[in-house]
Amino acid sequence: MAMKHVATPVLRALASPGSSTLTRHLHASPGSNKIVGVFYKGNEYAALNPNFVGCAENALGIRDWLESKGHKYIVTDDKEGPNCELEKHIPDADVLITTPFHPAYVSAERIKKAKKLKLLLTAGIGSDHIDLKAAVEAGLTVAEVTGSNTVSVAEDELMRILILLRNFVPGYNQVVTGDWNVAAVAHRAYDLEGKTVGTVGAGRIGRLLLQRLKPFNCNLLYHDRVKIDPELEKETGAKFEEDLDAMLPKCDVLVVNVPLSEKTRGLFGKDKIAKMKKGVFIVNNARGAIFDAQAVVDASASGHIAGYGGDVWNQQPAPKDHPWRYMPNHAMTPHFSGTTIDGQLRYAAGVKDMLDRFFKGEEFPAQNYIVKDGELAPQYR
Ligand SMILES: NC(=O)c1ccc[n+]([C@@H]2O[C@H](COP(=O)([O-])OP(=O)(O)OC[C@H]3O[C@@H](n4cnc5c(N)ncnc54)[C@H](O)[C@@H]3O)[C@@H](O)[C@H]2O)c1
Image (cartoon, rainbow, N blue to C red; front, side, top):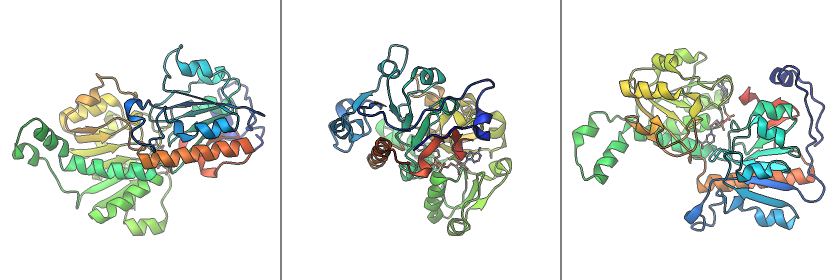
């Protein structure tokens, strides 16, 4: 997999003026490679399920395989601050595996220190925790396991839509606190049937969600930079909305399914939220920073947003005083929709497959590349 000498328009657009582009050849070092993985800690749960491969202790289930091939595999959950375990291993790592669920922020500074690094693999989908511009400039290859947990997320989004509309969380809370007050929950509980649901982003997850919503007899809308197949439009009945601002006031439920990029960071601030229907329900399992955190808090307090649900935060782990923990009518959880056991097994297999190809000098599946030969994948542009 030889690295081209890159001077593409995309690269030129991304590189800062005067920066020199290094190219690092994407082939494994002869002999032993140092692979560093950063995953969330499993603690007492690590041994409870042999398929719980996503935690640091179980290390994607690839330790024996890597070590049998003579490679060194360092796995940690310690990723913050100048003295963390990750910092110690950055300078001589050949490959760094990270995950969105416990994001090790791969900053430009870290990339500069990683003199031997060639490959950044994301165990899951969403590589926004990596400074992709710096990765382009350093000639690195970045790849994720595209499609690995799309079903996991689409199912979770459907669940959150229902949880919000049916006012499930306050009802559940009544039960565990010994209360019984039907009126307190029923006065704002709705059916999903007949509601207008719009997805911002109709890529892999957005499309799976539209298919899953079809039997609920909603009015389905979608906004994306590209239209979905006419076949799928027909199957789901979803209507394309070219202008996002025109779609927002129509939606009873808005779901976000775009990656976090320079174009989508802070996309939903005070102004865009004001364009939404009063009483809108929002589900965001894409990335927390696509919304302005304070604007969500204010609109939830005023009732403009009737309920906000998702598993992604602008800071992860979310601090104890994060205002989204205390908003009325929210359905927030830690980031776990894409790390179901089924999702873990799929992204672990995808990481293993790409490492195997890397050692053999073979190409990865084309859809997995996020940065390749100095070019950023279209969904991040
Ligand atoms: N919460 C989780 O556990 C979890 C798991 C997986 C993925 N995700 C998030 O979901 C995102 C989407 O995943 P996917 O597999 O559907 O990705 P995808 O690449 O298949 O789809 C993304 C879609 O967004 C569209 N898009 C990008 N920028 C846009 C813009 N500025 N305006 C309009 N449309 C735009 C693209 O055209 C594409 O159709 C990921 O990037 C990730 O951030 C979250």
